[in-house]
Length: 135
Image (cartoon, rainbow, N blue to C red):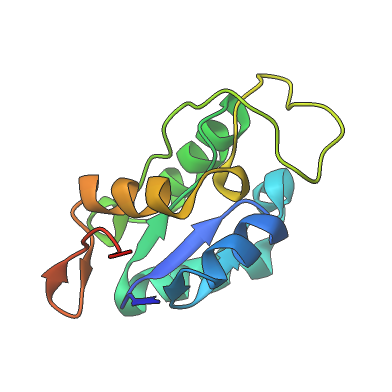
C-alpha cells in the first residue's frame, strides 16, 4: 500500500473502494455530478486542498472531465495534481453493459494502470517518486 500525503478526489464509491486497496490516504468522492450543488462536499474538498493539496483522479470519459473542470474552477491550481487514467475500452465487472463511452473508469482499471498514472503525474510517496509495485 502506498502512503500519500495528498487527499485523492474520485467520482464514486466504487472508485474509492478500488483506491482504498492501493493507497493509504484520505479519499473523497464527488458523488458524480452531485458535487456541482453539494456545498458541504465542496467545502470539505477545499479544506483538504488547503491542508495538503488534492489529487484529482476522475474517469477519462466526458463526465470525468466535467467534474475535473468544476474542481479546477473552485480550487487554486497550485493545490491540484491531476492524475489521468488512460482511455481503455472495456466494461467494469459489476456492470451489465459498458458505460456510454465504452471506457473503463478508475474502478475498472488495474492497479498497475493506477500506479503508472500516479508516476506520470509525478506523485511522490514518502519523499520518493511512485514506483511500480514489485511482484
